[in-house]
Length: 479
Picture 1 (cartoon, rainbow, N blue to C red):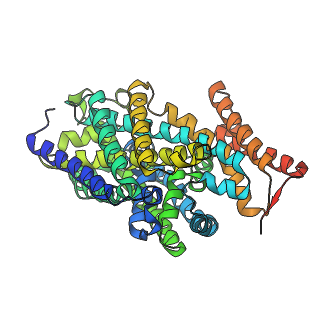
Picture 2: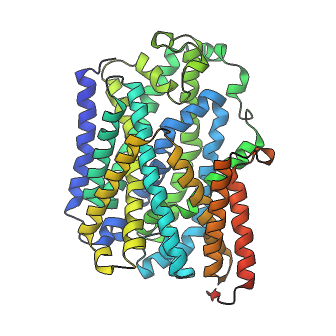
Picture 3: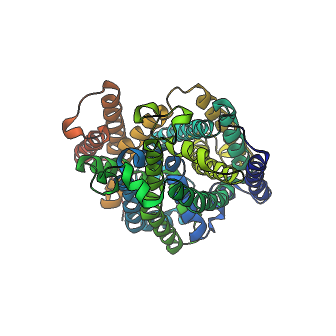
């Protein structure tokens, strides 16, 4: 399908707007604090929308649509973990984190570990987080590229990787966290407008309304119980902890002007995750399934469920039904979803590198805003190179995410509930938890009850932490 010049013009205007926001903030960044935490003066609305755009953005286009295609609206339970994680961290994490961040000028998540433990677990966490977020950036860029290529066939995967990667890198390098947050806000509005005002109504009426939709799918697709309890548990264990260890989230906590603002932002983000995005995403994926069952995609080579990747059914359907002009808006919406996650992951990786890995050994370089921008650029280029070489979209993300959650979550949990903090226990729990999960994933062992390897990684991490802490005589006691 050729892209009409009107659609292309709309898309180019969107990309130029994102670059404009980045360069607008370029001259306003006078220090590393400006660059990484936006002068600690940002509002709940912008932070809240940025949080949900980062957390749901890329996964929305790829994951939720696929779940709606396979499970129907029961797939919305995946993002129920979002509201649980957001609100738990608002109640238990933010009160601990915000004041330490403000009083000690923290810029990163591992600095909190250094405050409660010492430099060793902070350094390890910095390395793990850095590797994880480089992987996240790469996987988001490639996922968006494959989605764009499937939707707009005149764009190759390589071209889409370069478009998404270069634009996201340029405005992130130029503007820092403020550029990321404000572009996230704009991108979120574009995404919601494109899919609520265009995707839902056009899809619904093109499929024949409720009668046409219900006729082609069994009742389970419209039920909230079309999912196993074990699957919900796996989602809870793998997704909720990221709200306590995500570098992207700590940067935004530190960026809020006060604790009340941070809590409000997290409440906003939770509500947008579930029910808003959860049901919107799965419903649109369900539309893709109905279109396949109705034979609307047969002309594009998709006549049965086995012929199409569940995650691209929706964009292929929209490509089929949308008129000129609206396709450009939806193209912008899809790119917005991916870029709002990719830019935040790039910013997080840069923060980890400069604050937690370089600064302990070279404070002058670690505190330089120009060095921060340069290394953000270098990380972005590396992420693009990785994206161009990756064979599996989520391969790097899977390992990075699994190691982060199962390795770092327990030391954070323990600093929230315990006054005694053992650095040795933190280090050993990180290694044992992360290693357990990765070994189980690589070995492809059939686990009891179908539980996720992260469940066993976190369990191992807890046991190692408690045992080591019990015998460690060098514990640090915090009031």
